[in-house]
Image (cartoon, rainbow, N blue to C red; front, side, top):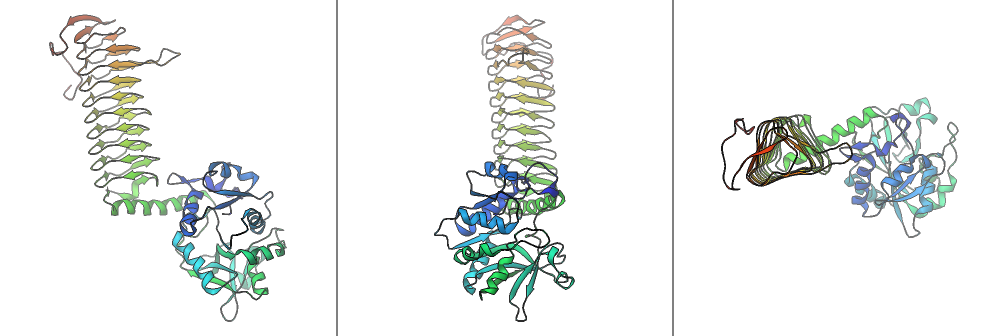
Length: 458
């Protein structure tokens, strides 16, 4: 993998091949294709300017350092110095061609072996050759050389057949000839494309795998091309999910990272973004306008126009519209989190109802608890975060404020506007500012009704 170039046309401090496509660095897609085609561990050529590439993929590939940017031929020399002596054949790939498929690489290897060629390359008759190297053939149609645009004559620039930059090479021959590369007269760089000329000079065949110009082998040089590549990948990924049983109302507006897992009978409405390690269970609907990142959504859920980050939502729960689950949140089975409700690092038990404008931070709520409109856990004292623990079947009235750390026992209730600063026993009703016990019931006694419960009908 040739990944030593910084990619200046990207206008970025980040090495080009680390720019993401569907949640994965560009290079990751190329590594996958190479591993699938060869079964071997890739070797990536990097430079001091792309040290971040080596750090990012340290566990996924081996690396060879190209000390100075002296061209693709010099990068190949650096790679050969790092190859084991028993390697007989290599693939040479550009790290900025993320749409390459393993099947094509397998065909390229087979083409070289079939022709007993010193090397095989991929050739494309391009609709727009642009600045890509031209394939110069002999009278019998054999590949004689590759000419770079900077070194091409006017007649050579008229050639539409281009070199797509993928090669399969016999290593023994390559080792004998890599030292014969000469600097380009126009740039001073060593081009690995000169190997074609050297092979023909040795009387060796250069094979060509002719492929259609479908755009998959175009390298990414700037952010416009990056966006086009992501569009193409997104189309493939979304189509794969739909063939596997996922409904997308408008797949052109659905953004699903390649790392996301979707079960059958999931429905995704327009303008949805699913990122990272997100998993969505069977029969769940992700409603329009939702963004879900690194989260697990259970079976039969509804997430509607909401943001869910690094959280878990159990089966049958309903989120939204306009809810925000911040990292560390856990919503229990059948629970409901409604309009403009926010949760952070909190756990809601089964059947909890948190409707209307409210905030729960660093809290634990038992099953069946009802959170009234405007309820807030005051979890930060200016220095530290504190926990709020709320038991089962607790009833929090409208505009309840819970100053952490505080605990409310099972069946406890708060009146509208209560500011709770001390623990509340099980079954107690507290009202006022600060809240005081008005009534003490047995834990299973529902007690008198309170005017506005903030629940689904409040």
